[in-house]
Length: 499
Length: 56
Image (cartoon, rainbow over all chains, first blue to last red; front, side, top):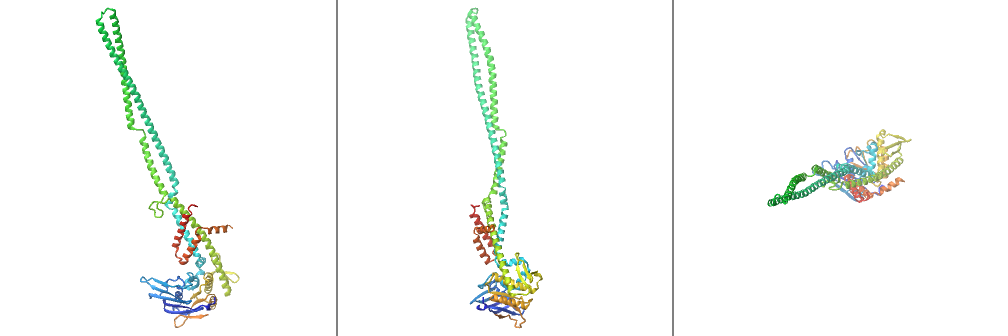
């Protein structure tokens, strides 16, 4: 893109850093800000960077002794303005416009500020470089999703290992224990039923015996009564025969016959008396047996079945154990109603829900890992390609190539394909490589960003090589801004323009 | 071949394109939105658990 087709950029600073008021103009091409030490070169860079990146906190921009400040940029026919305000609590707030080419990555890819550790990036090893390319290629977004997914998977995993789910794991055992208790309860109930049934049979048996005995007693009493009645009749008969004998001649045959009758009646009475005696004993015996049976019945009815109390006590205990076990199962099956996350829900449902969440998050992790790898591989390839082109076009003596390997470790190859360890490079060489890597990063990730800013890197530099690189960058970026130390007596930053 | 199959299956993950768009927009605007990102992931994971209940 030809630089001279663009308009000038005007930067106005008010109460920024050590500068009370400054108006400075950048033209397409190379702009060299020349000023002595502590005269505001870095302040200009910081103030300008605020308009296209949020990497510099407003508190680092506003003058320490001021409450308000302002940054204004004239760009492409428009004025962009940002105000800085110190609150009573001491915080500095920034409000206002950002330039249209604002990009959060621009500060890392297009502003080579000594304090941002541009050299540290190449000496920091593969972890630092990987992080740098992650941020510029937005690979960090993919790794952020991977990390967030992993954190959630771990969180859900911890949840599944928690007490509620551990109890749930015990559920089969608890259900088996409950079944055992039910079986034991049924067995005891059966025993009680058997005992009661056996007792009722026994009672019925005694009842039957009493009835039978009563019936026998009744029959025997009737018989006794009949015997007593027969004895009485026999006595009457003897008395009648005695009266008849008194009326008859005692020597007559009639009298003899009557006497025989009386003797027979007396014999019969004796037999009856003996029978009555025997029968009376039998009746007494029956009465005694009956009494004994009634006593037995009363006792059986009062005491109930033997062992019943013990069984009923055991049944009560089992019932209590069943209630406790059911409560335990309920606790294992369901979250309590006052649970913060899953009130009253079935543990099995929540568990399956969490497992499905983990399943989805694992798929997401895999997807973003794949995307991350592709993005980072592509970023590294494009970056290496831009670095190679820069070294080739610059034709810097002594360097064959510089590239990142698959692990994002930086390799510096000297002529003859000799690898030189980074730490053995001179300070000037480190700066050269850093600047070229940064330009490659800009061209890879922010090709349309119109600025490239280099601050205070000329101190330990070979001037010839530095300006060669700057001229190379000037051909590739519309506006290049470089600060340079000078011993000017005016003390004010001045811009020297090289189209 | 199996790698291609794996990629295809990854592309068929429910809501993955939608999630990618939302996450990239969110983190491009503010890289410190990690907590919001986790909330979004949880919302999608819950939706998956709810809507893919029968299949599971």
